[in-house]
Image (cartoon, rainbow, N blue to C red):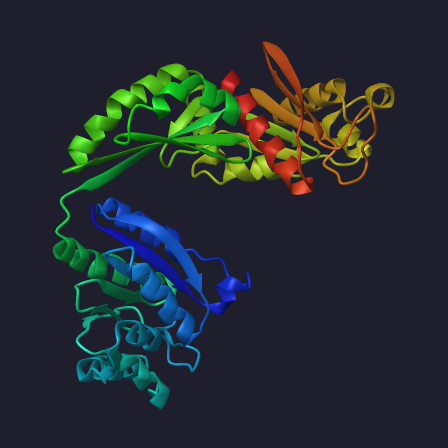
Amino acid sequence: MPCVEIIAVGTELLLGQLVDTNTPFIAQCLSDAGIDVHAMHTAGDNRARIASAIRAALERADGVITSGGLGPTVDDVTREGVCDALGIDCERDEATIERMERFFASIGRPMRENNRKQADMPRGSVVLENPRGTAPGFVASRSDGRFVACLPGVPHEMKTMLVERLVPWLRERLATDERIVTRVLHVTGLGESEIDHRIDDLFRTGENPKVALLAHRGTCDVKIMAKAPSDARATEMIASLEAQLRERLQGHIFGSDEETLPGAILERLQARGWRLAVAESCTGGRIAAAITSVPGASTVFAGDVVAYENGAKTALLGVAPEIIAEHGAVSEETAVAMAVGACRRFGADIALATTGVAGPDGGTEEKPVGLVWLALAWPDGKRSLSMKFPGDREDVQVRATQAALSLLWGIL
């Protein structure tokens, strides 16, 4: 199977000033096209280091794909680095000049002299037109047939060029007839080690299809990947393994692929005809934000009270002052009273509440930082749960939000 390596170019990436979103997108598109990505790298805007990275990658892979460094400024030196790596010089592509002149005329701006630099291509390159900007891409080849494909760094320009120009070229050039299909099962309510324990033997079923486990804060993904001559055949290969995984993880898979936990909750609320209310203290509105991120949430979501102060818990949710005085704001009794109060205030069918110590201060030996109480209340019952989450303030809030949503999903 053909393989490539990816190099993201930009000093701002090395300084942590910009997050590289191009590389994951490129990798996914290549995977879908049946092309393996063997390594990913980052290089600064330095001609010599770009050339060195390309030379090293071409010793291991059939080709290299870069993003960034094709602009008109003095620090855009990717094309020069490619020329150095391949031992060729640049030549100006007049057809590109004409396209750039038409582009600038269409937007009513003059084309500066430095823009002409963008039409300089490694000699013999295949030019990749840019329908969404000025920087064209190109594919340059070494004498042995190994290649370097260069894409612009602006994400929307890169994505269009990759999908519409480069991927078709790669399919033809590499003559790949394999497809890679991925299925992702989203798991909640089980830790990574427990999932591993339940499906350990399936990890060793072989390389095709292959199982991988990816842990997030509060959830885990079980990924199944299969390679085959067609999408249909790869999907068939996945089906049997997926059935086994679903059996082992029954009751904990809330969705697959693009499905989300808030989306799964919304579907179950709609199926029951229930309205949801939320009362939050330590999570500060994160639960409501998660629920309302799903289109159609207004059909089931009644509202949220972020009651941080004890007085707000009493005034807005009807939590009796003596409950807080006797048991404290972070307690099972207060969490349950918050849920009951939210249910009553909004006339909801079910309510979810959180209260805890998010930190970094405020913890005690009895109630340490990371302790969170979750509670649900509905006409026929109540449920409460305490959990202790590791990490900083954001970790606690994110994990508590995920745990609360998981608890709600499980009840529904």
